[in-house]
Image 1: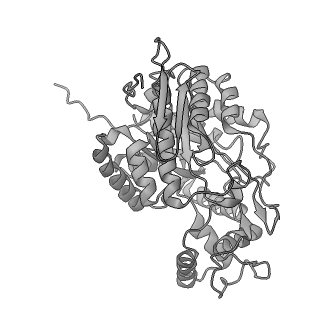
Image 2: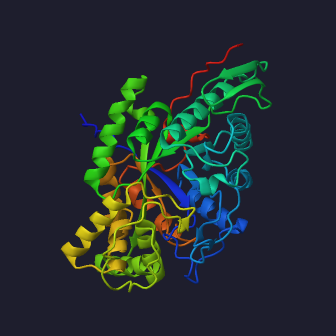
Amino acid sequence: MTESRPARKQIHLAAHFPGVNSTTVWSDPRSGSQIDFSSFEHLARTAERGLFDFFFLAEGLRLREYGGRIHDLDVVGRPESITVLNALAAVTDRLGLAATVSATFNEPYELARRLASLDHLSGGRAAWNVVTSSDAFTGANFRRGGFLDRADRYTRAAEAVATARELWDSWPAGGERRRFAHAGPHFRIEGEVTVERPPQGHPVVIQAGDSDEGREFAASAADVVFSRHSTPEAGRAFHADVKRRLARYGRRPEDLKIMPGVTYVLGDTEAEARERAALISRQQISPQNALLAAEQVWGRDLSGYDPDGPLPDVDPDPESTLVQGRVRIADPFAVAARWRALSEAKGLSIRETVIEATARHSFVGTPESVAAALEEHVATDAADGFILIPHLTPGGLDDFVDRVVPLLQERGVFRTEYAGTTLRSHLGLPAPVWKGGTP
């Protein structure tokens, strides 16, 4: 009698089209455009060739500024995410398409309609990465202006997701459309939706954020969490905490996938990979980028400091508006203290401290060792999968798909073909129960 081997936990993979952060080395001659459709198409086709779950697209609602001027370290101009994904739906067949859309400056009726349209046009492959927008600088671009307090941002986001789901459920698949009516703290709307219930029932909901509010929101409403943890231990602690919270909402651990954003560097030998990784880190954190990162924490003009010298010995300015449009540091004093301790313990300069303190988790090694490490992380519940953020756009995913994916398949931890046609089927997520009804 042959003894059957226990099934190995399967890895989920997604591809991140980088935004304007320093992960992408735009100065590399191999980098393409951040706006030409050919860039999006190349990365998406590569991800689909690698049988990835989804393509993940960030969003920017205002150009970043420094001292009142457009910041010359940022790539200027990105197209709107759902528009790009609708175009990608026409050149891909199975790949999920995830759009980042702010719940702070968008209305649930419009969101529900646009995402349902993407789900229909793609045959059930749409996802919504729900983000909140944190500052009045971004809010000034919108009719309402201003911004919401931290707690209100999450209550509005939770109500926006719940309301969008009410709207998707207001028109049963194959049935007659029905009127909806919603009255809550943030939204009071009624009428009829103009798009039939999406093929997935509800597009997949993704959430990013590590705060207590973000974890609770993820446990109550998200299908996927886009997390950021630099060590396996931190990943396992986050994974256990968020999965434990699901029971409060009548959900099972498998109803939510945790997928940290990670980078990777391959080499023919371990030493070659480490050497390449060190070079890439110094390309990503140039002397200018190192000072910019420090200025975000200190809120002060540090142009007079040597990036290869010690950290500033002054306190941060918590009220600073020097750098606008980037995510604000919640507690700059605590961050500065951590950076000083790191710098003093290891004798690091400003640039070296920024490289070490801001790095995402990165898998560095040969294709064989990287495949083994990915499996180890998922098997030990440090993650359910990964959102890969290549350092080159659009060709930065090619070697992973060509060299690592086949090894994962040989290990029996990654699909050899798509089993279904929808993003929910790729992720193994249950179909949402229809909760519609006449108000």
